[in-house]
Length: 234
Ligand SMILES: [Zn+2]
Image (cartoon, rainbow, N blue to C red; front, side, top):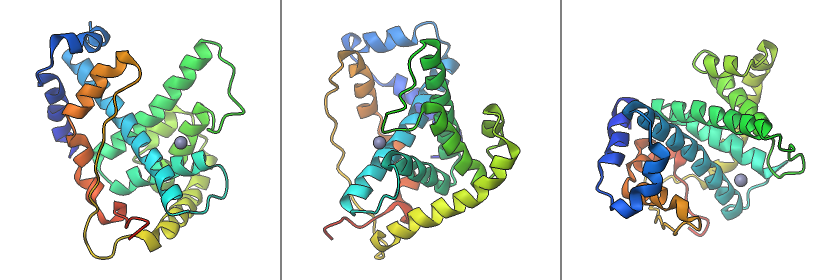
C-alpha cells in the first residue's frame, strides 16, 4: 500500500460499524483529538506495530531454522526487523521506521519523566539505545533519506559514517543465514492468522479494530520474494 492510500485505509478503520458498548474505551482515548490527529495517531501506532511484527518474526526464524545468534538475540532481531522494513523500499515502511524510532524515544522520555530506574539487566537494550541502533541501520543504508531521524537524535556525524559499514555487515550477515531458507519455486507461503482475546479488557476495542482491518498486513511488500521463506519442515 502506498502512503497516498494509507490515510484512506486508516480513516476506514473508524468508518467500520462498531457496537457502542465495545467502542467506549477507544472513543475515550481518542476524545478531543481532531480527525487529522486521530489519523496520525493510528498511523503512528500501526507503524510501531509493523516493527514489532517483524521483530517477533525474527524470533520465529531463529527458532524455526535454528539460526546461529552471535550476541544478544533481542538486538539481532531488532536489526532484522529494521533491515526488512528498509529492504521493502516502500514509503509506508520508511514511515514505520521513523515512527518506531520516535516510539522508542517517547518511551524513554516517559520512563525518565517517571524517574524509573534504567533496566540495565533486561534482555533488551535500553529504549534510547534501540532508537540509536535503528537509526544507525537507516542512515547506513540511506543517510539523506533518514537524515531527519538522525538529526532529531543528534546522531554524531562520524558515527553516521561508521554505520554504512555496519549496515552492510548486518545486511549480508542476516540475508546470508536466511538464504538457504528462501523459497526458490517462486511461490509464496500461506499464513494463518489467529487472533487471541486480549487479557487486558481495556485493549478489547483495539484488538477488535485490528481484527476488522487487516489490509495493512497484506501490503504487497509482505509477499516479496525477499520475505518469503520455506517452512522448516518443507
Ligand atoms: Zn523480542
